Image (cartoon, rainbow, N blue to C red; front, side):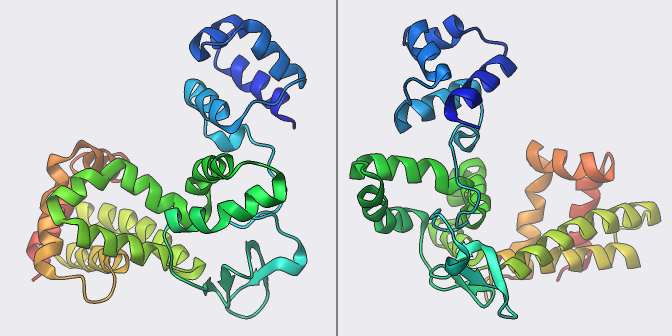
Length: 274
């Protein structure tokens, strides 16, 4: 689907007329009409503004290729595929970013953009600034960066204030270094923690067998994200004790395991993590 078709579909889904969208973007109705008819394709900065006004990810407006690298965003052909741990082709990544089930080098999203934007500009005829702007809009939604970017946006300032830049940077570095198998293991463990929390609450004893199992599952999950040498029981307990004061954590656990789940989880960690 071309940009114009996508724009018209998303505008209508938002309940906006062309005139109303134009007013929010400070352009004319005729400009919106030309975009939707495919007569003009707007620049990346206006596309980002449109996505923001429509409350949609910019990826929903871009005409992306069918296959692209979930690390650097480059268009993929089978010859460019990375490989899984067993050596089989992985069509989600390019071979320069991902080999044998892991990322080939450590980097940050900003460094990736600075490295790749000049090549994107050269290959597409964009200016370097346009390429940087496009990559800055796309990369946060790619698999390698999405979780870290989302967590940084939601909790970064608060976490850095509480734990310091070094601790947060280390956690981010650990997350960026995870391969697909580690991510899947973490996600499976996260789901298992919710089920174990339900079982422990049914037992009703924060110091009981099921609660002890819950606490140590949660410790393993925290340790996976903090990385080797970063985990300590004291830090784990301190982290958990902040859950009940944060509506986001209360909603996360209570909505999945039942009312009072967050409070019970904290009590289980306090009773069993030494």
